Amino acid sequence: MKKLCAIGEALIDFIPNEKGKRLKNVGSFRQVVGGAPTNVAASVARLGGESIVLTKLGEDAFGDNIVDTLNECGIDTCYIKRSKDLDTSLAFVSLSDDGNRDFKFYRKTAADLDYSKDDLPFEAIDDCGIIHFCSVSLVESKMKDAHIALLEYALKHQLVISFDPNLRLSLWEDHEALKKTVHDFIPYADILKLSDEEVEFITGNTDITKELGKLFQHRCKLIIYTQGKEGATLYFRDGRSVYCPGYSVDVVDTTGAGDSFIGAFLYKLLEDEKDLDKIAIEDYQSYLDFANCYAAHTTTKEGALNALANQKEMNSFINTIKKGSR
Ligand code: ATP
Image 1: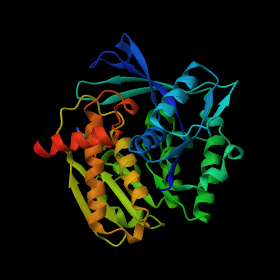
Image 2: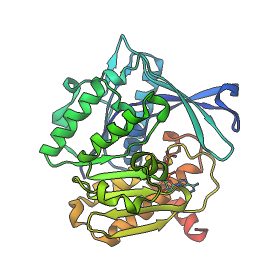
Image 3: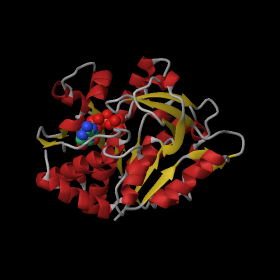
Image 4: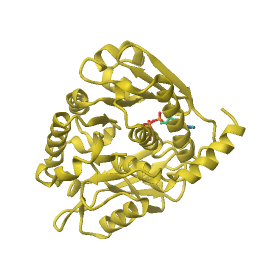
């Protein structure tokens, strides 16, 4: 089984000790490791696969916490760079009663944005089957240039490229620049994961089916449309699609649901080892169902990375869920 390579931010999320308050009114927070690419790599590692993360951290306590936590998850952290001069990125989060979030990022002196194309470990990338990236690290920076160099290399070496825009509007003063950036990077993707809000932001249309022609116009083979508790639909380039309903669970916190979903789906693709074009539709359906189940489990626990199940926890969750509801 090949490895997953996730590139982008690894940061500390300060999550609130109380729910239902606006960010400005939250009294106390605690630190958890976050960052969408990191959560995806952690999902693969927790499920028993291999993953590496390409990022840069400050030489500070928060960076130390990230490295320790990723090691505990089973991620290979040896390609993570550290900076003496720059800081590990931080994000403060508030949680509404229904599990939705509000963010404030502190990354003006972000070490992750200083990760450069010269930091890319091409010898390790050759062992990877899938490259995964998101949009938080695509602001103008050395990190953006590193993404481009990595994706060009992946194209040349026929690695599968997965893109989850994972939009964080508060990080972009100019939302049109974010939209343009996402459109600039879609042509790299073999797999594109979009939530309903992202479809609307990127295409201006709430109906994804009307936009599939445009979204598939480059090299994209699979579009995964996640629909929160309703589950997810997988669209294929040739017009076919499969839908899997979500699982009904007692939601505690939806943080990381989308990341754990795509992490579980990519884990299944790595385990399958076939070219995307050679995988049977029934297998895709079962991978989508597994991803729904894995993500539903994540929502039953607080936080993101610490909520990710390993195979054993997943098996017992699947057994309770089978007896239960959908
Ligand atoms: P995120 O909140 O991490 O940004 P997202 O917006 O990328 O997530 P969603 O569509 O909200 O993506 O959720 C991804 C997947 O997580 C869904 O397809 C579903 O499988 C699962 N999921 C999300 N919310 C719930 C829920 N309330 N109950 C059960 N499963 C859920």
